[in-house]
Image (cartoon, rainbow, N blue to C red; front, side, top):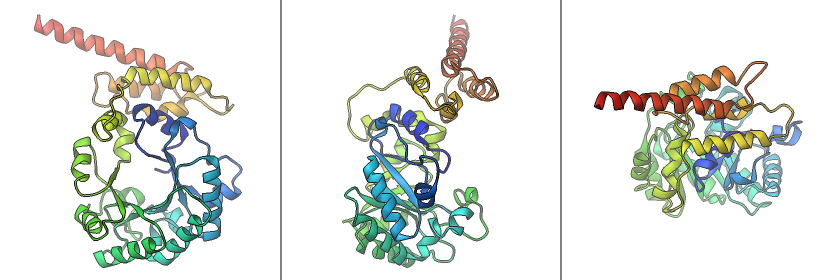
Length: 324
């Protein structure tokens, strides 16, 4: 979720679910060690939150894991699944599935300096290394190094010939391969990722694995997370309505002190909040048209909400008139 799940996005999602584990966008070791910006900033309200780390040099990975722990992250996740060219050229991401010994070295180096969990997100294979035996070998080597939690995108990645977008859609999903892994390794925590679009899908997957990661569907339709705490974690706390979330995010926007911050930096993650609802298109259009440019609306979210509520009242009045 590079460039998507930044701290503003995660704060927004945390308003919807208090229990779901949130992951940062992938951050490289080079950015953390040598970058001029603060790539590890997050809001305290985001907990539990995991840093997704990209790299392949054990010394650097260990240093970044240690920094993450000091900063307060709850987990460090090694990205061995991203197929983008810039990741591949940097010798990390999905290409590391061909080098399980390197991933194992990183796990050992990181676990030696932190107490928080070190986990791995991977694919079921890459290129021609797509048999179950290849996948199992990767898992065995990394697990023997001490990693006991894997999040598996149930597609292989074609590093030659497909774009990152195509790698999210064209290689077929193979859920049974992930189920087989869990059956072979009941001692490991196995979560599944890819193509899961509803809580019903999530519950079905939890019959086979320990966890479910939902990425782009949760971004496009974030209110899908609203029932997670109750239906998955058994919580009884009341849900925040979409309108309550908008008001909370407006307050969040008003608290920002960074001189470069603009309401759009938070609003862009909220375009799908009214997905499937009356006024959803109006919401997206209002935010997009009034959140950017030289003079963005400082009350962008509240004014957008007013436009949605007006549209919903008009729909209700129209429906009532037809009934009458």
